[in-house]
Image (cartoon, rainbow, N blue to C red; front, side, top):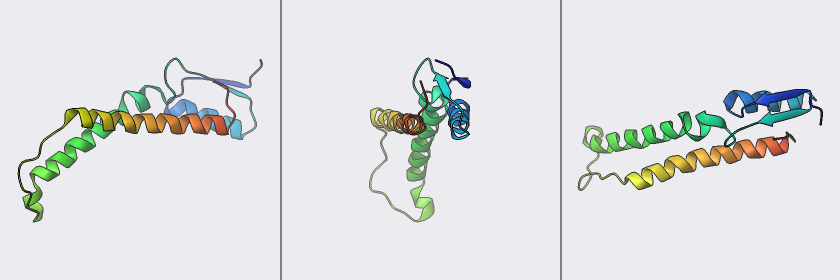
Length: 108
């Protein structure tokens, strides 16, 4: 099969470039070794930001009194749930990339 552009990697730069090239009428193939969205979306930036958000919420709870909010008892972290949320955020975004690739008829 012949392609006008072959994009290596489906990270934030790759999938955006592939979609734009497809919108311009080019025939595109995307090569991805792992999951759609690349390292950033699946294992790096996005899951890390989700973990940091959980830590930020916990920090807010520990200082709720500073905001005039009284909590009964101490906050407790459920690390399994924190990790599950982080993975869910990443998986949801990866599915979004899959949808965009199907919508623009890119070949993977």
